[in-house]
Image 1 (cartoon, rainbow, N blue to C red):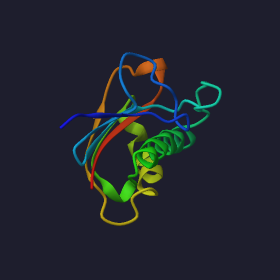
Image 2 (image 1 turned 90 degrees about the vertical axis):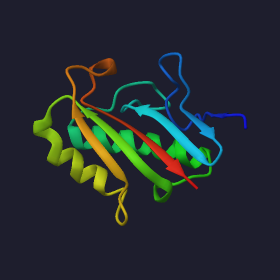
Image 3 (image 1 turned 30 degrees about the vertical axis):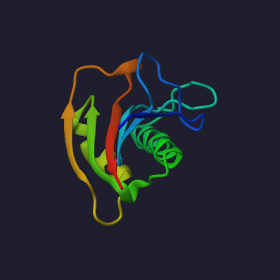
Length: 126
């Protein structure tokens, strides 16, 4: 079995030596996403709600490019800069998983790439 690299211009290009996602068999591993506008490369971070939605839209574009959707996601990892924003992030995130939400952990970290406030990765299985 060989791995397939997933790339779409509908999501930001990687800012380091990694792929947007890797498909291994029927499992898709989506790298951590931050709120970068895929067209301009600018951060979308006026507020944490807007930032979280931008992250989820980027992740959705990568899932779609591989033929997957949020319904196929079995696990997410959320890294946040301030656990005090957990509720707001959770509210925006939850709009993408209306039923059967995936397993998840949320971890507060001291710093994230480009000093964003939230980064989310996921694993999806068909």
